[in-house]
Image 1 (cartoon, rainbow, N blue to C red):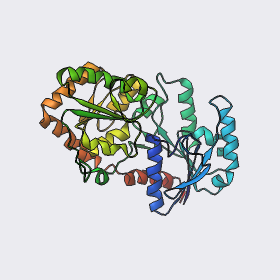
Image 2 (cartoon, one colour):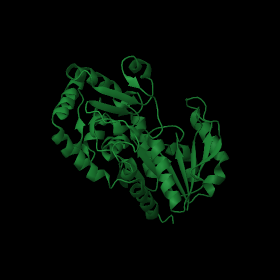
Image 3 (tube, one colour):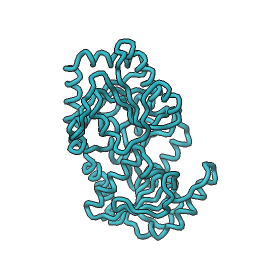
Image 4 (cartoon, rainbow, N blue to C red):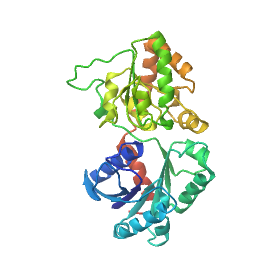
Length: 347
C-alpha cells in the first residue's frame, strides 16, 4: 500500500508530532508499505527531496506566515500531484487544509490525526477548521480524550502515542559510569508555554530551599533558553533525549510522548498546566492516576519533597505506570492506523 503523510514538521526537526510520524512510518515500512512524507522545508537541511529510513520525503517551501501561505502551500502540493494520485491513502497530521482543495479532485481516501491544541483560549476558527477536517476525512485519530471535549470531535480512535520499553531499559545506559542521583529531575521538551518549563523552574527554587544540591537539568530549546541558561543547566536538543532519563530520579514532563518515555524508564512524572485545556489534557488521560499533576509551583515542590522522603510510595506509582506502558508500543499504534484505513476498505 502507498501511503502519503502530510505534516507541517518532520525529521530532522524535533518534536512530538515529528517523532510520531517517524515511528509510525518505520513500522509501516517493516510491513512492506511504501511511505511518502510531504512537509515544510526547514533551516536544518536544504534537501528538497530526501530519503530517511526508507521514507521518501518532499519538503515544500511555504514562505512567510500570512494569509497567502495557504495558496503557496496548495501550489507546492499541486506540483506533487502525481504523489497524491499514486497513493492509496492520504493521511494528514493536523494540516488537513493542505489537502482541502484536492479532496474534491482526487477522491482518494483521506484521514486525519489531531495532535494537541493550538493555544488557549481556543479560537472559534480553530474549532471550525477541525470540524471541517473531521467531516471531510474518512476517519480520524485523536491524540488524547481532551480533543473530544474541547473541539467537539468524534474520534474514530483515541491514542496517546507509543514508546519502546525494551530499547529504553536498563535504567542506566549500558557501559555508563554515571550513577542515578536521588535528588534530581530531568525536563525534556521545547522551552515555551505549552511545556510548563517556567513552572518547573520556579518549582526548583522551592525544592532547593530544602535540598540545595537538587540537580535539575533541561534537554530542549526554545524562546526561554536565554532566561533559563542564567541559573539552570540547559543542554539544548539532543538526539534520543529519552536516554537521559536513566541518570535522574524524577521526570518533569507534561507532554504525552515524554510521559510515556519516562514511564518506560520507571520515572515518577511531575506534570503541570496553566490553563483548563492543558489540565484536561493531563487529567483525562488513562495514566493520570500514576503521575503528579499540579498547577502551583509551590505545591508541586511539596510533592517533590514528599516523594523524595517516601521512595516506596514513588515505586508504587512507577510500577503501575510501567505495567501499562509496556503495551503502548509503536507497533500497537500502527495497528490503529491500519484499522482506521481498513474501515474505509482502502486495502
